[in-house]
Amino acid sequence: MSFSSLSSLQKLVPNLLRDAKLPPAQELVLLALFVAYIVLPVKMPAQIAISLGSPLGLLAILSVALFLFMYTHPVLGIVYLFVAYEMITRSGMPPLDVRDIGAQYAPIYTPQPVREVPRESPLLISQEPTLEETVIGNMEPIQTSTFFETSFKPMSENIHSAYAV
Image (cartoon, rainbow, N blue to C red; front, top):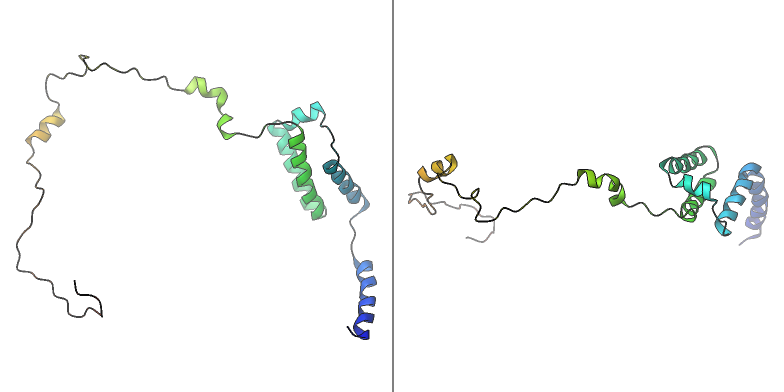
């Protein structure tokens, strides 16, 4: 490294620090609170934990995250995502299971098991054939193999170096 590049680097560093935009003090304080919440084992109050368990509480967490991403420094929004995760896990809310969403309606709309009809039941014995059975019985039998002899023989003129089959 030459002397001229070292001196230009010394001039550049103070200019970078001077031109760097620091977030406002409120955002720095909020960032410090977020980091403290993540690092320290803070117990979630019961009323807040109950409200976070509702869909409205989750919507509030999401709206705060969107607000922080839109109107503050992006680092604050990213740290808040970790804070939101910690808030949800510390609230003791069980993870959302898709199978449990309609569990309270399951007894109402669950069909009852179908009774099996015994084989000897008079309902299974039919006295006369149905229309479908009559039509199928009157149809001609299906030909399984019908090959016709023709005088047509396919010819292969140019097979482009392919194997002759």
